[in-house]
Amino acid sequence: MILAKVVGTVVTTISHRDFKNRRLLVVQPLGLEAEQPDQDFIALDSTQAGIGDTVLVNREGSGARQVLNNPEACVISVIVGIVDSVYLED
Image (cartoon, rainbow, N blue to C red):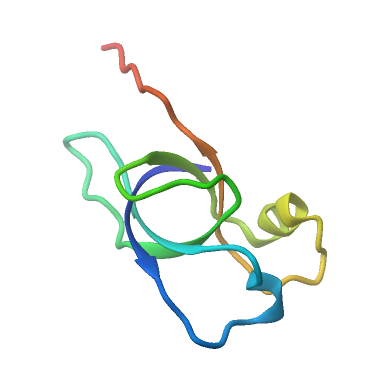
């Protein structure tokens, strides 16, 4: 699981059957100030997240398929929660 910020949406005219009725969102991984962030990636939305939301992303295929309740789904990353706030303590 990683924290990420939703930075965009993906619009398709044809999509895979496992993506039907779900949005594809572009997310940017978040990290500490001293860390180099990973590249943006696409995640399937299961939470109705929007641009600017901080989200919790399951970025592991087996776990993502469990969230979708479809063991055969061709998916790696699924947004599983919207984060209200993050508090870091030194």
